[in-house]
Image (cartoon, rainbow, N blue to C red; front, top):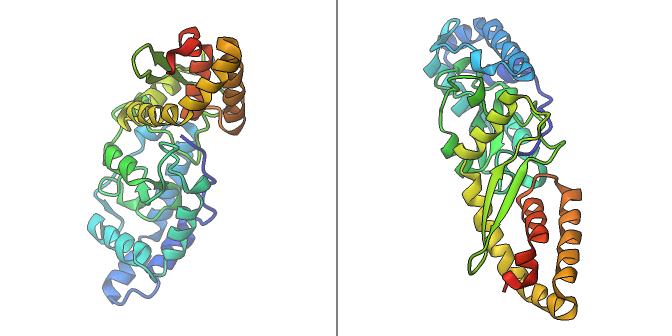
Length: 278
């Protein structure tokens, strides 16, 4: 769950660029007349996102003088399609993701744009940059077009929500052969209840626990030989020191990466440091 710089293009600029040059005169006139509704919806959405009130943001099947289907056409043909007039904004949003990583899982590569609020229910936000998020294919599919039923089901918005200031991702080591890992949300005591519920909801919806556990298992295979050598040279205490150093290094890069949580957990496990990794 990474922060991403918010798009610099406004909804007004993006929409005007998308509808410029539409050949169907009737459709072009109606799209142009609907521009104030599009801008108002985008402004209202951004305010709601910043205030944490997206759960009550109203949707509508049609907007102004056009239908939801016509706005979906604008998105597909005037924004996404290569060489379309709005493609410049699409490309800017796609390349804004840090290291090209999906901000929702923080792991997989960005593959497409996701509508934070689905375009089927919120067509006015079809090409609103603040409603478009770079995402990996898996997160895009798992999120689907779900509309939050309450404040606790509002997904984190990578442009407006920041949960990286304090550690919340926790890992536990299972004393199995080979060792297993379980990841969960350990919300800081200072967090509001709703924020903790939102993070937990997103963690479960996107199946991040399974994703991180799988990656941790692969990481363990890669470091097992090195740990065995450290153990042979200095025993459990030396292994713990080695792992703590690794955890600190990863924490400096990202407080809530699965790597940080994994190394923190194994460094604190006496069982693991005493040879459980073997």
